[in-house]
Length: 165
Image 1 (cartoon, rainbow, N blue to C red):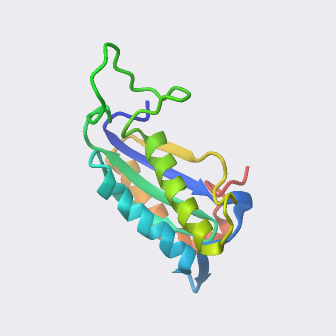
Image 2: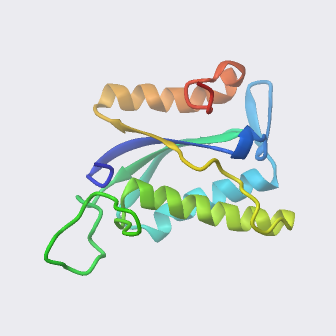
């Protein structure tokens, strides 16, 4: 269930793994204008969604890693009460504050701004899906945070979540 309180590690890859967001030099990521859009929209995510907080994140040339904390329980605090409380995403029925809804909004906002910037209306920016993992304990949280922080240093060998199988 990706709407319960807790920490989640997400990874989103660019469409066809295109290096859109900048480049890595000497183990450090240098964002270009499109990368700055990603950064701006990521920070806005927590501003427009009171039910989440952001943890560590990194923007890479062809993907994004971030930790999202859902802090309000089921992620449904802003929905009107109904007879049946649904915390699972159903087709056409998003759950406010759930990881799928957060990621969908982030990807949509980035895509809109990137396409305006490039004058490429309707062009895909992201791959269709994304990767998510529930962070179960503090040890995992620290390991994932270190992985995110070190990602630019080891980008050439990063295949864990870069879309390679």
